[in-house]
Image 1 (cartoon, one colour):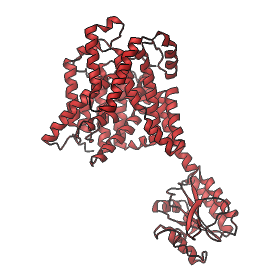
Image 2 (cartoon, helix red, strand yellow; image 1 turned 45 degrees about the vertical axis):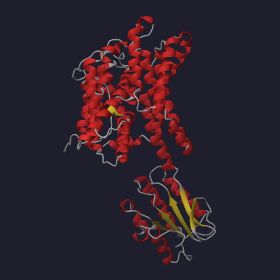
Image 3 (cartoon, one colour; image 1 turned 180 degrees about the horizontal axis):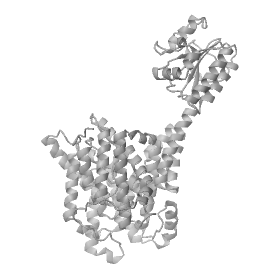
Image 4 (tube, helix red, strand yellow; image 1 turned 45 degrees about the horizontal axis):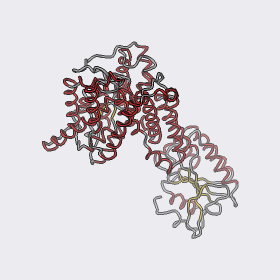
Length: 567
């Protein structure tokens, strides 16, 4: 297997390099405060946020192919592992960080397997609707978790509903000074995001808060601060956990894997299309694996292809991974020389920054669009969000996948079925299949809208029988329009053979039209073609109708009714 490197960097021209360098500086100024905030979600020391945009950024730039994807800390994956690991160890403790590192290492291994065995399709089982609902639920959960620090209320639980209850109980004891500062920070960031999206409002807020805290000694006046932040380069080591702990966190890594594949693939694809570029998704999966391995050995946590940070980079003018390498270089400077002042940052300011991230995760416009297009999909999004809030983030992603699959199976189980009937002008038009409908005297053209499998085969058979039995005149010909039938499984084939044999005894001849080569292979393998007769299976509907006419089963000319030949 050939492994190309620097696919997201080459070729690069001097003028483009200068533009990407400026974009990297802009990206760093906007994102450093955010990656510090992600540590509040992850339950890790503040400095680990900087670690996520050091070696992982470089690793993806080396092995990935996307010129635009920014791989860094992400709120969704941070929420996934923190909600589970916090029940196994105290957040930010040495044991907790070892578990966090093992999750990142296992996630890297799963991504490598996905690259080798081409398992990226697994993320397709997380529908866009479920993903919107999941991220909305995570936004509510993360936002709620930040309210304690923002209000100065003690919150002991890490379960969202319990947290809300504890916050409500603690409202009489909230600190109005913390509330005022928190609201000011939230207002500044949200207004900046709305009216000056390319201006580093978060960085200005952080610098201002650090300066004010150091000058006024806010820690001595009841404003909790984050405390000393270790500087220097991260130590490189493998996470030390037991075999039983590794097995225990494997499901957490699998949840992170699904989220990474789903978000990263979609994000890189969007920006490749926007800039008319090609992207090697397999190379990106390998780049994500390398980034998470780098994160695991450098004391950080799971990283992901971030849609929000990628959008920031694109808006800043980044057109290659050179911008991300500049970003990593600035983080290196911060780690070596500028971590000292971070100790004065008030915790409520950091919590407020995370709260604005949580607000951004609630996709109000996306949910509104889903409601306008499909109430069923809207309920799916709400159920997924509710599962995340009520049960937990890790379980929520399983619910999201489960809901997506159930909805898909339900669509296939209750597939649309149509009968071609003549309209006022004599043209044949599709109408929902109802007993009593016929295409012409003695003929029914029946269209089924899904593959035939074990769950829906009986519904297919029952509907065909009812159409034939309740037809106003005896049915001699049944044409099955199989355009939407791409597959017939073993159970469905057995059921279909029984129907065909019964119809043959009753004198009803069956013809299949619009049969593609894959369906034809299934029909031959399952002996369906032998029962119907190879001469009554056609690649187009017109040929099927012509065959019926040739045998005297249709006197009227349906040519104008069925559309152009070849259909």
